[in-house]
Image 1 (tube, helix red, strand yellow):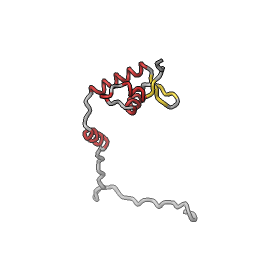
Image 2 (cartoon, rainbow, N blue to C red):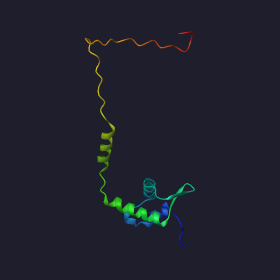
Image 3 (cartoon, rainbow, N blue to C red):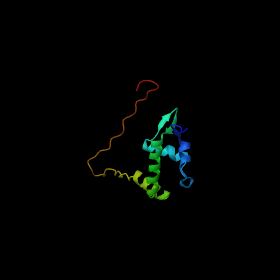
Image 4 (cartoon, rainbow, N blue to C red):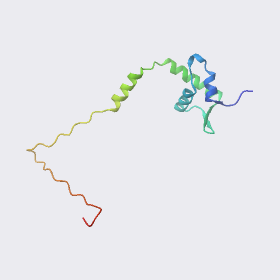
Length: 111
């Protein structure tokens, strides 16, 4: 008798061993593409959902993945944006520098 739902470990075992599909990949891909149902805090899959995971694995195998160093470099480049440097006002400009106000002290007596 076939079960109605399959766990991630059972789904990973359905794939051929040369594809090296792991339980981690099944869970991560299912979470990413919103496939599967969570029952008692475990993600389980029906046969149509397993077929969807097979399609996703085929699509992933067709797309070339960049090397790890190249991916990390592009992430760093997009995250780090140079900030413009602030220049102090010129001495002959009409901007006057004011002293900072004294901070009121909340301890001791009155300010």
